[in-house]
Image (cartoon, rainbow, N blue to C red; front, side):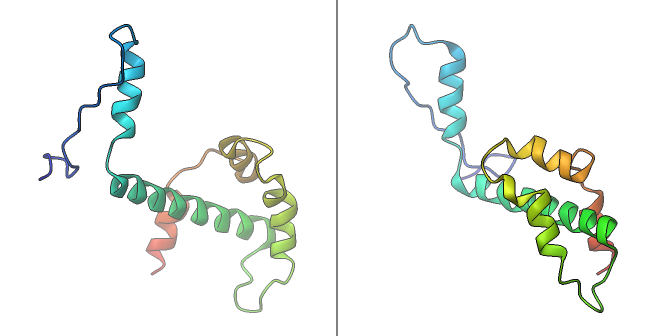
Length: 113
């Protein structure tokens, strides 16, 4: 059974003592959402990030898909991947992209299909 928006109905969770704050109760309730919904959101976000990174690499190094570009990975590693978990992903990605993450690169990729 699902609700009108496609997600299963929320399950009410008792988070403990009545003295707990409303925000703590809400946080637990949000965390009980279906794993499938989180998975779908992760795939969508990954597609946005991958398209944005590809677009930025093309901006920086040119579109060399025909002849290849052996240095693209070293460049990407130096500018983005080497940071690993040393910082938050959002600011690192924004710095690499030079702008906030948006859907335009993914839409452009889809338009080329």
